[in-house]
Image (cartoon, rainbow, N blue to C red; front, top):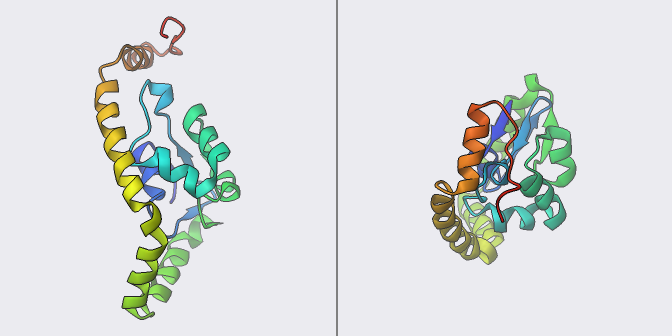
Length: 158
């Protein structure tokens, strides 16, 4: 991961086997800030990956998370210099490619099986909620505030 990973870009890293980030990488899941809910199974998978409190920091506060903070949380495997990022990722991919394929598939399946069904169930619930939230007053206020270059005022919503 290099540069900004916002929204689905950050969410998709949860579902990767290995994640390497450059020192310049930043992650953000601003769904709540935009009057929306998390998506792609992240409300279940992220707490499983990095613990509830770290997930709450990312999802509820919606702020930018630096690569080093993401590493400390367990969100990425390693932080490397930008010039070493591709080499680091390719070396890991090459090491995996040299291993016997059936045990790799089995290991991945076994590691993920215990929560794959729950992630899919959560993803379905998130999707239906997300679609509904797109037309919500809170999302409308977030978009209007963005267009007017001001901070959204959610105080009138309960």
